[in-house]
Image (cartoon, rainbow, N blue to C red; front, top):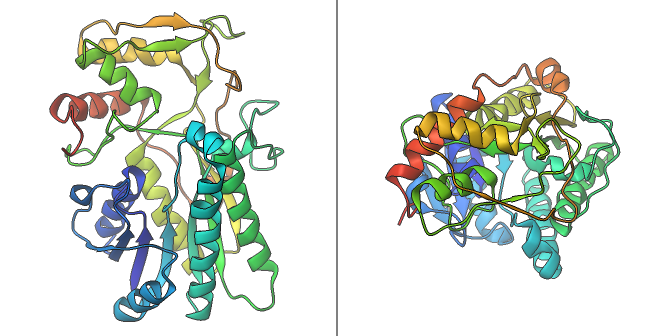
Length: 328
């Protein structure tokens, strides 16, 4: 039987395809390539198309005997979601609803969803666990929570046999250990690729938004998880569902908080050169301190992260040094 990975040509999706193949899974990828990269799909069949095309999805499921889906296909830029909300609701929610309807009709029962810690908004405490209030502060986060809620409703419905795991990612970073899959700093707004860009592209100015937060060094704290560890979490989520696991949500992070300046300091250590940056005003809506309580993932999925911040930075530095233009 085969796992369908939607959005499997994207950054996290491509790493998950690799993890599934390493776990001896048959995999087929469905991606529009609007924002993904054909070159990132390694050792798996890539079909170019849209998850909202129910005839195509049905054909893939029949041809490849699909019995589980890992769903990444979505837009994910927070700022863009605020200026183009209708685009995010259509792509992230309406298209996913079509996908789910098709999968239910075909009796595909296992579904792993790429969600986000952004559903928590600004948590009241850290670490944040899965029972914390969900108070999304962007359209992007709202769309992730909407799909989570849809999956919860399906689990309660007598007309649905689908079970799912929604993985609430914290800050994915790094690149593959063989240096074949990574991020493109020209399209990613994430901190790590922007720090790497400041090192390598001398014309780029890295901005740190605020150094007056109530933290040890005045900068915001986040939970950075190696993308290869994150990929393995999807494999564990599928195994959990295959063993009869019920619909649930799990945080996927390290349980360790790292400040912006600590990340920059680690990058300087790895690269053996100083990262240039300038301090800018705080950005509205940036939470001070967000890192995961990962007890649920360990207990329910049997998963925990294995790589530290230095491993993340080393892999990212190697990737960006050799791929300054991404896959181009």
